[in-house]
Length: 303
Ligand code: PAF
Image 1 (cartoon, rainbow, N blue to C red):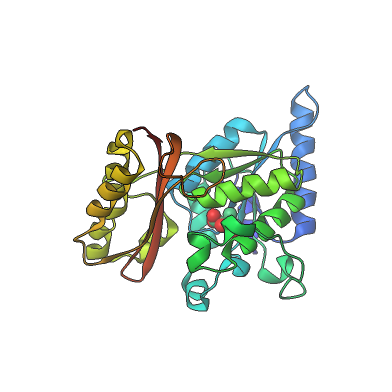
Image 2 (cartoon, helix red, strand yellow):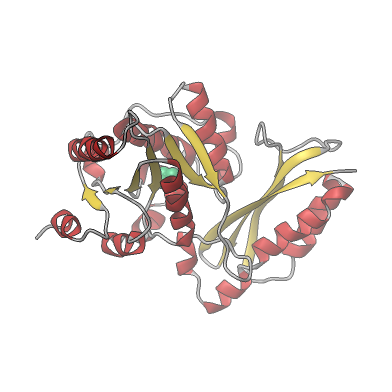
């Protein structure tokens, strides 16, 4: 029995589609079911794009999607286009059965889990969405082309599923900024919903990459939320105080190699000027052992 057949037999699990034709067909069927049960016209569809390795952070997106829409689609696709390091792509966790079990009871109706050849049938796709200047900063500086890959696959998934809502986690702040801008620039008819970061008890943001941390690294990783807490507590004293406080919180943990620490403007995702006051976002990335982690926090810069 195939995975899709097994999932279809178990009502508590979402249906799995692996091809574009199948996902569109199943969406039509689901829309027919919803329209048959309700009086108002077109059922609303929400898409939660993921690369699998699902955790509570993803479930918060799925739960919010179920509040917003009649039909919730979760895509599970490890997108090779956004990986710059082949070893990172290779080791990225892939376990669809575990992902389906995680989703059980969380309101996902359909899981779209295509093969690479379904999404990129001609191999290296010639047509790509480019993320521009901001795409080359921060995450994009250490992973050139990463955001072009993210935007290209998100555009494809939006075209395949045709949702009214698409949901992303606040943890990937630069990704959310760039997706919002793509949607505005390309006039895509979809609303972006951003969901607050889910954290472990000690403050570490949940991430599929946390599973790569050994016990010592996991303890050291809490440096990232500590850096952000220091930044937020100094925010009423201006940008220099914020950066100084954050830098001193980052020091002294041998297993943590800071990559960047910056405070960006919410409208441009560029570092704020020295005399800026107003809403901003502190962003941080660090390597903990071999694992690269990111995090961010909103703050209000005073003087
Ligand atoms: O955030 C992710 O998991 C990925 O970048 C996304 C949005 C699913 C695109 O592959």
